[in-house]
Amino acid sequence: MRRGFLVMAAVVMAALVSVPAAGLAGSEAEQQVFVVVAVGDIAQEQLPRYNLGRNQYDDVADLIYGLGADRFLMLGDGQHNDGTYDNYMTYYDPYFSKVRDITCPVVGNHDYYTSDSAEGYFAYFGELAHGPHGYYSFDLGSWHVIALNSQIPRLYDHTEPGNPAYDQHQWLKSDLESHPEEDYTGIIAYMHHPMYDWELYDNADWYYSYEIEPQAHLWQALYDGGVDMVLSGHNHNYQRWLPQDALGNYDPGGVAQFVAGTGGSYLWSFPNSESPANLVSSLESDFGVLRLTLYEDRYDFEFVATDGEILDSGYGIVCVK
Image (tube, rainbow, N blue to C red; front, side, top):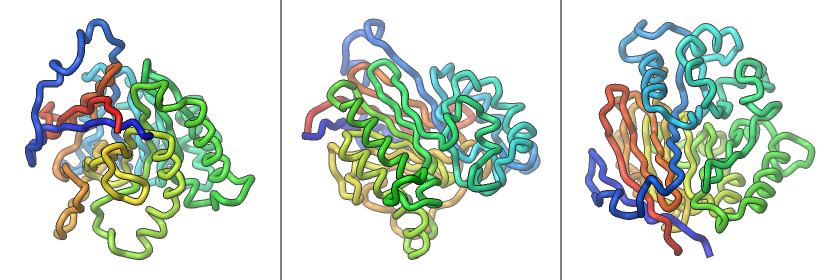
């Protein structure tokens, strides 16, 4: 039996449910509480302010620093368009070095545009990147957190033993087995590519074969292992999806997905078609970060824009389904 979260939200764009989260649990002073911020798709090969519609990553860095987070989950593509070491040092580092000691990064596809080993990314982040392939896990109090490399399944066949994609898949299943969901309040995974997306190319065969299909095995393992949410970047907007199974069907005990590719590089608009049924919040006009507050019995989430405005918010309560 999967344990799931009852997720409720007060959404700026479309109000769903609003209940004061503070009334749902005991004294917060008696709990271990962790604040996590997450965002990807950050610096560009241009300095901030070069174009006011782009390159606002200095404001994002200031926002993250000001939120006083315990961890910053960098959701990949910290440096566009090519994640070379020099580019990281020239554009990303001057602004994000102040949050380096709380940074837990994952690698993005732009980091691999330099080579199949993404040497610039791994050289810049060093031991924080957990090379050579960048997947790892850690605990935050009663929460388990899993960092994955969603690019290597695009470079290697995960069904063939001996390559990085195969090794990551086996490691993920082993990590979930050794960190069972019943031992934790919740389990969070994060990787650069989202599984579900309201994307301009969502009906194209090439989009499915390149973006979706390579990570399906990871999502099945995450679903089977009781993971509660997956955080991703890659698409330069904000999206929040209802809990789903690995095939995209609504499942209240399934995996909720947040997309936060709003780290300052540039923003993408959504298509004119009707939004997918399980997509409950979508923002395309603001840079900002996803902030999670992790308690021992629930979590709160907020999308915080660089001006401090909260554009999406809600909470999840631990329950059994």
